[in-house]
Length: 270
Ligand code: ADP
Ligand code: MG
Image 1 (cartoon, helix red, strand yellow):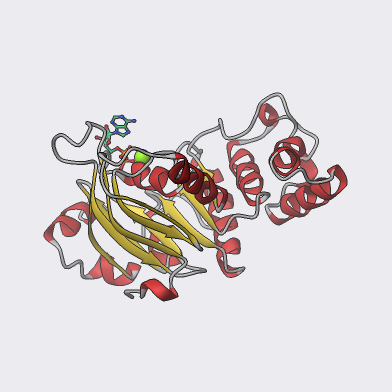
Image 2 (tube, protein in one colour; image 1 turned 90 degrees about the horizontal axis):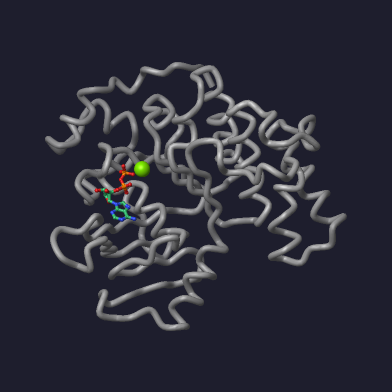
C-alpha cells in the first residue's frame, strides 16, 4: 500500500499551499503521497478540503508554497513563500505541466469554435510542431479509443456532456502525458452519461495509464481505484484500498465522512 519513493512515478513530500501569503492555516498542509506508475487513485473529501488545489499544484496551475513534487524525472521543490520563483523554478513547473493531462468538471474543456478533431490536434500542432498528417492520425486513434470517431468533425456544442468529457480526455491524451488528472469529471453530467466517461478511465487503467481522480462517484472509487485517499481540511487523513476504507475506516473523520455513503450507491452501471 505505501509505495516507496524510488518505485513511484509521482512523489509528493510535505507539500504546503495557502492563498493568504502564508498567514493562517494553509489550504494544503504537509501533503505526502507516492503514486506508482499505472495506479488509479481516487481523491475524496468534503467540499473545500483542498482536492482541486492539490490537483492544480500537481500540474503547476498553482505553485506550491513549500515542499517537493516529482513527476517522472521532473523535480520541483520550494523552501517556502520566501523563496521567490525564479526562472529555473518556472521552467521546471512548465516541464512538469507537460507531463500531466488534466480534465475539469463541466463543458468548457473544449474550444467551442474548433471541431472535435481540431481540438485534439491543436496542442500537438502548436506545442509539439507535429506535422498535420501525423497529428490527425494520432487524434483519430484517440477518438477511436474514447469511442468518438463519428463526431470528429462536429463542434463541441453539438456533443452530449459525456461525449464532451470523453473528447476532453482524448485532447489531454494527445500530448502523451505521464499522468492524467481529473477534477470531478462527471459531476456536471446527467446520470446516464456518467458511466461512459468512467469507462474510459477504466480502459486507460487497463492500459497502464497513471490517473488521479477527484470524484464523488463512490462506487467507482471503491471498485476501480487501486486506493482511495481521504482528504479533510487540507490533510491526507488516511488512504487505503477502497473495500477496506469503506468497511473499516481507521480515522473518525473518515468514518464521519463515509457515513453519508455506502460505497455501493451509483446512478449508473459502467
Ligand atoms: P475542494 O476542491 O476540495 O472543494 P479547493 O481546493 O477548491 O477544495 O479549495 C480549498 C480551499 O482553498 C477552499 O477554502 C477555497 O476557498 C480555497 N481556495 C481555492 N482556490 C483559491 C484561490 N485561487 N484563492 C483563494 N482561495 C482559494
Ligand atoms: Mg474542487
